[in-house]
Length: 129
Image 1 (tube, one colour):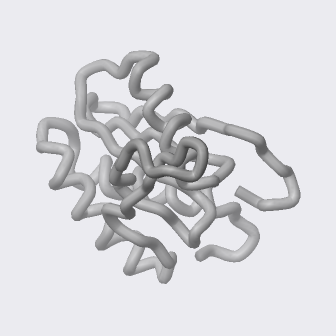
Image 2 (cartoon, rainbow, N blue to C red; image 1 turned 180 degrees about the vertical axis):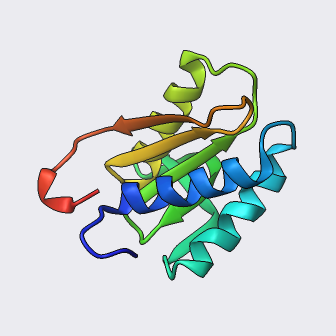
């Protein structure tokens, strides 16, 4: 990761590189694979397709898969759609709760300009995200 940059800033830099190189029009899986390459090239630790579980009263009541979790601190969800809705932000918020994480990025590669939403749940400013 670059010196002095937060985890979010470093991931966003990688996403801009992918977006400017590939442009819009590919499937989400293409952008996801390209972002993996970019994160690896920058030496940023991440997990791809991380399984998450939702618990209720100690029992597993649901399962999800997060696109990317960076350094066990930042959840990254990718889309390749013309327009995002509030449901997509709610999805990231639910993933944050399930993963017990505080900050997520919703990245949309579906238009000529990369869409970036930073979603925060229970944030602690000492985390440098």
